[in-house]
Image: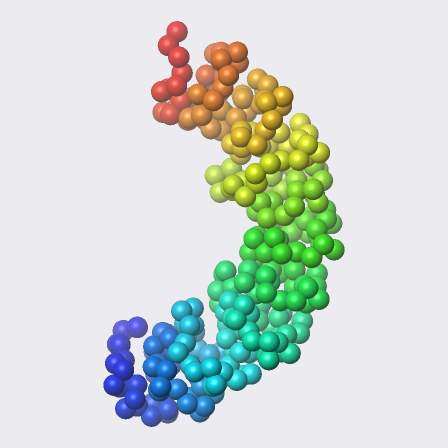
Length: 272
């Protein structure tokens, strides 16, 4: 904020004056002292929160006794994190319509993940689940069983979301859909760090090729790592040529590694 409001000024200002500051001071709600809040100020602040982009990411100092239904509806709507904090006494506000409204107005990227993780299973409808997973790939970790299947995963791919692979149970996806998702991802912008082991039913020739392209050499059992695998692997990850077994090290492998990363590969290519 351009001008900081002191604690003394918060107490000297009237509720009308503070309300006029909401638009100019994005962090004002986080800075109002606990003892300055009253029911009228809370109501005004929550009413303005939908229209003015004020930060609530770091919480407010509003006393618990002043946190009404209006408070929880407003906070959950603009930041999905507050779904995690919603008290039992106010969980009656959770309906599919409210969740969809909150998704439409949520101002926090990670808030979509917090929201989806926190809502009851019965509210994880197909529409809610698609929105959550398309916007934040990690939401796929909290999918109900009815959506842990190729049909749902294909819909995510159709909407341009391919990064969910590290957050699902890999026994719920076919090799065809797994390969399809991998093939859509750029090796430079996609991480397989969430995957610790690839089930055997997924290790088709196409999947092994894609994993080589993505640099996932550690996920591939030795029996699948032939010369063709390493040619693909070093073509896109030339600096890892030192991982190629000696029996496959030849001119073709070296040229492929140089194509992938000439500077890094040179350090590991043996002298003639």
